[in-house]
Image (cartoon, rainbow, N blue to C red; front, side, top):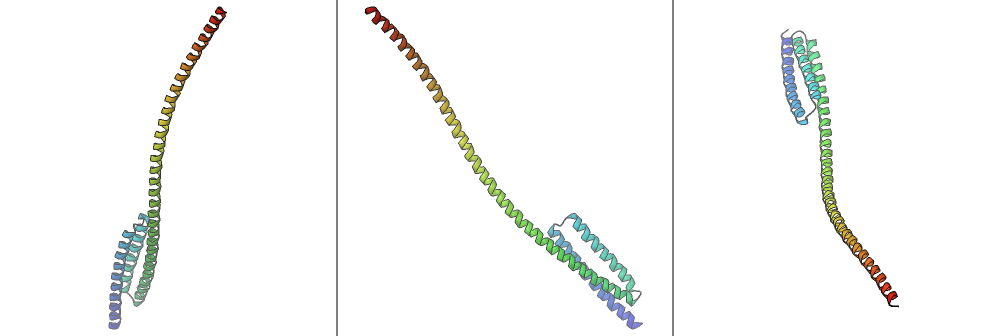
Length: 177
């Protein structure tokens, strides 16, 4: 019985150590989760998983006080939990990789967008300059048109005057003959 109690005490110490390691891992996992800005659903899932693990450890601890078989069960469950933590850590690492690739892609897209906006701005300035030049040309054409219309009117009057003068001269020639 004393051997069993000592063995149970050793197992309980191991279990407590594993429990502390699990708590440290939980804290590290929480820190990584905070850094990764995972979605709220993922945080709830991880928290629920850790709470389930904590509940399992409490159940295992109480079973440890009853039998050595319970201790083996707790050890088995702890190993399973460590594997799950490794799986979660692996998933978090993969998520971090995806987030980094997404960040790089977003940076690249932002750079491309900024270049496009700069190009659009230069094109806008060029178009505004072209519109100003065109407006000036249209104003100049309008002034030239007015000037030409005035010249045509003056020419028509001159031709009418010449025609009248011609008729008058022909009339004078006819009268003299």
